[in-house]
Length: 484
Image 1 (spheres, rainbow, N blue to C red):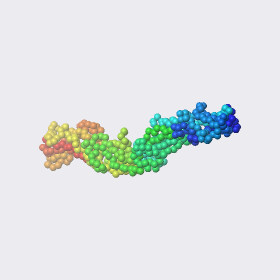
Image 2: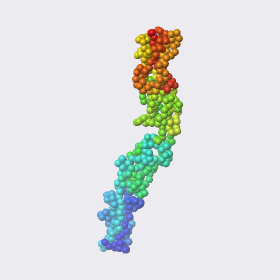
Image 3: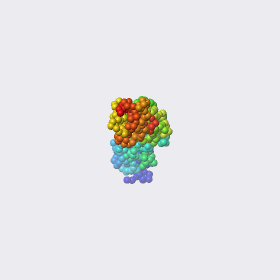
C-alpha cells in the first residue's frame, strides 16, 4: 500500500497509548495497568503529514486492533484534534500482547498504513507457592520456635529478623512486595514494601524486619504475612501468616528451681524419703529465660557435701527436667541442702531442701530368726555363735554402711561392754539384694551372752549410714530376756 499521506512514502507514525506504564529493565514493554481496563482504551492517532479533506473528497480513518477494525471516522473539512483520540472497546481488552495500527484513506480511495504499536495486557495475579506462600525464617528458626524472638536473637542476627518468600509463579521485575506485621490475624498493619528489579531475578527474595520496627510493634504473639502486586496492579492472595512470639526488651527472670515430690513453697522445700519414688527430677521453670545454645546445669548440694552432684543432661523427651541419682539423695538424709541451676554465668537464688530420713517400714533385726520384743532367748542347745539378720530396706544400695551391736547387763549387774557384730560395714551387692546376714555371715558370739546376767534383758541395735559414716539413722532394735 502506497504512502500517499506521508511526505517520504514511509508508514505513518504509530499511535500513542497514554496509559501504558513506563518501561523498566527486564520488564514487559508497553504494559497496561489493570486499573484502566474497566473502560475503553484511549488511543491517540497522530495527524498525518498530508491532509486536505473537503466536500466530495473526504478523508477516513480506521483503527485496527489485532487485524480487526474496531473504530472508524471520516471528515470533509479540517480534522479537530479531539477527533483523533479514539477508543478500543473494553470487550477487546483480553490478556496477552496486542497490535494497534490505523489506516487513512483519501477522497480518491488511496490509503496509507501506520506503523504497528504493541501493548501488553496482564490480568493474571501472582500465584503463591503450594504452602500458600508462608514466610520462612532464614536464620536459626528453631531458636525462634523454642524461645521466641528475643534480644539475644536480634543481637546475633544483625538487629533484624530475616524471612524468605517462597518462590512464587513467574516473578517479574516491577513486582511489589507489601509486607505486614500484625498484632491480630488479618489486622492489616503494614510494615513496609519494596519492588523487585532485574537484579532480584533468580535469587532468593528476603524481607528484613528491623529491630526498631519490632520494638515499636510490642511484645506478644505476632502474625507476619505479605501480598504481591505485579507491575500491572494485579494482587495475589495474602500469604498464610507466620506466627511467632516476640520477647524483646524483656528482663531475664530466674525463678527458683522446682523439685518433684516435695512439699513446701518458694525457696523452702522438704522431701520425705518414706514417700519417695524414683526417679528424682529437678525442673528448671519454663519462666526462666534460657536462650538456645546456652548451657544449663543443675546443681544438687554444695561442693564438699556428700552427695554433691551436677548435671547438664536433660531427661530424654522431657525438656528442662534433670534426674538426680537416688544414691545422692539418700546420702543427704536428715540434712538440708541447696538445689539450684546455672545458665551460663547466671546463678539464681538456691532452694533449700530438707531431706527427711527414712522412718517407716524399716526392717527389724533378728537373732536366730527371732525378732525379740521381750521374748526369751535360750542358750541351749549350745553353739559357738548365733546368727544375726536384717531384711532389706527402701533405697538400700551397695556401699551404705551398717553397724549392728548388742548391749546387756553384765553378770556383776553393771552395763556389759557392747559387742559389735558389724561396725561401719559397707553393704555388699549381695546384701543389697538379699539382706544382711542372709547367708549366715553375721554372728553374735555365745561368749558375749554367757557373760551376761541370767534372766536379764539384752538388746540388738542397728544403725545405718547413707553418707559413708558421717550421719547415722537408727533402725528398730530387738530385745530379749536371756535364759541360760
